[in-house]
Length: 531
Image (tube, rainbow, N blue to C red):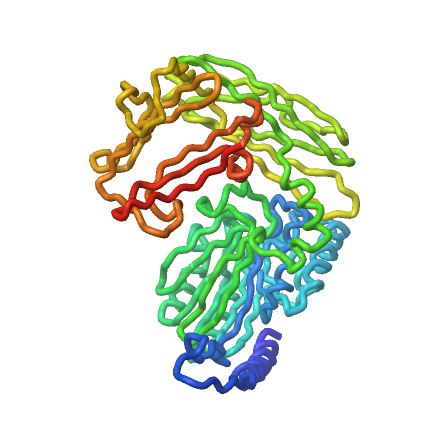
């Protein structure tokens, strides 16, 4: 039976190759533009008929997280690959209960039936662990390993579970090895060979004929894709690229790409030089309606507002511990959920007394944030800790979304300005300012220094500054912003509102003035807003 199946597949593969190589290129017609200059880089179209694209999904199970694989299916339909391959662990399995296995396979097959392109099954240890599961696989899919040729590329879908030994003990049996040997011998001149299986057998011992199979791959251009470990890693070995893919819904701590823990699909473009591969994280691409007019209006209603007011925490030179109130305002007609997450800092610890709470429509809640100095160092040396808050609203008939807010919390020293006792004159001279108290940090203190001071009386603020710059940029007829300048911004909002001001509308909410140095022609550029 195996030889008959091979003959049929070889015949079909020839048809697939012929169709692939006879692809008709699109008709191209360019407007006849006069002159040598054209609004494009070149007309070397990237449309080689030998190129094609396919996708790979990886482990769905082994602690599956509902909805993730289905999301991957929807996004594959957006990408429109020519076909999709798998590397196993499609169901949870690990049972001999046929009713339960039927239920799991019915569920999974329903997922892949939604794909708009062919899907190729590969077994994992969660799909075949015992004779009952193996027989059911063969009953459904005919064989546990097979191959096809597409675009003069050999695809070998193999079974690392062919002795039912379970996780970490995968194998290639004598029978499967002999089959693979014949397939490879029959396709010596393909331009590339892909091998798909579940367990990365080069990470394991006692894998039976795997090393023999690997030796057959040494002399040909090939790539191997596996899953199983739920952590992405690529390596070059045996004259090829070998990959362990992460997850498409399988159990994972999801600590991010640098740790190889993420949900993804793999996108392969097969070129004449070889495969070009990219990992597409499921969170990274969206439908065309990710934001539409209806959701835009709703988002603008809530996202442009700041529901939090955090009391500023002022202290003297030292700080041990303290608390601040966080006022939360929900001005919508639906409930609002707030989830706090305290970040880590070596210097400061912080904790919210209600990490998660629901704020009723059109109401206000207050939580307490406790802050401690972990290092007992001065305020100036403390680094802030990060407080995150995710806000969501229970809007009906709307796509769910969370609005993230991030605050960096630390105590600040309370500064006091000295009063002006009629000793400071507004004359452009610094003779009556004995010492300027504040120094601005600069990257090049040798060539640039800036000091300033502030005082006040019943009517005015007085600001003095002394700037020394060895490389002065002063331009006639240019804006203040495009040249060296000195200026100030004064915000007169109430203390708590001012402390929460992120500065994005400072030019509307504050008093400011800026002035440039005098140019060689004596011109001075200024910009100011005074109430």
